[in-house]
Image (cartoon, rainbow, N blue to C red; front, side, top):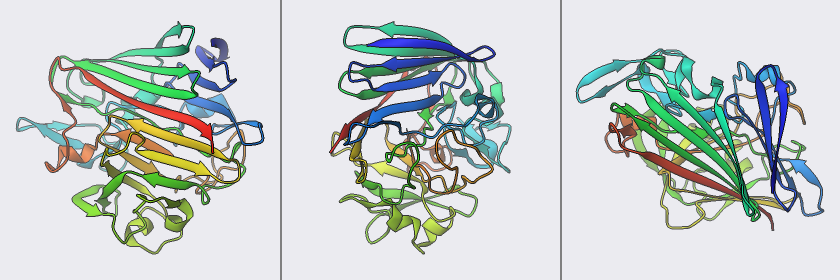
Length: 344
């Protein structure tokens, strides 16, 4: 187990964790961005299984939020406003009338403080940041740590911790784009997904949850027994069409299984298990990716990768039938998501 550090862009550093199985995970101190995850396929070929930009400069704006830590609030906040104890809070909109992924002061554009952790059976990268009150017009000073751990069981765990001195919404995630074919050789159509979820949130034309919790039965959103992503990417079902032929929806977990998401890619033989204590997840199938972006491996195009954004839903700020994301003053926030990589 070891960590390598290199200077990659001005004051940016890239930290690469390597385990005894030669699995590698590289992370920037800027945005906490995962730039690559190297794993073997069934033939032993080691390849990158997340999308990354061709140049580090492209991470400055990062319109796709590629590989980044997302916060204070992952997802869309409707009309850039919400209320806490009947007091209206108005935020800086950054996507039409709404706030997307923390707004203009999002954590994806923060230069994080870094502490490295090296033990005999795991290594870690601990990122720390204090988000000041009124950044993006959010209330409260929030101390945040995000720690990436890699062990010899090929598990990458992301531990999110936060504490605020005032009530404030918090829900953090990572926005990595996965493609288990390796080096973006194929689209995600053949990825087979099994998902422990009976329900998902309906979206309107602006991709804002309506508050309606929909049953997955008899829809392309029923992944409980597993099916290919391509089935939904080619569907005429209105919720697939509304996001541009694919998925950009919040699934509510049943938590009846240890691994709430299983992904396999038949050609490579790679498999990914995801477990988390988050209440749900946005699955996003890179519906808006196109050739205006430049990736290091492969072609940037629609359906080239899939995101598994484990998080609470910001729709709870407007709909009380969902678990709240309001963090009370001095109440610890602690969530963990683990990605276990293997071969089937």
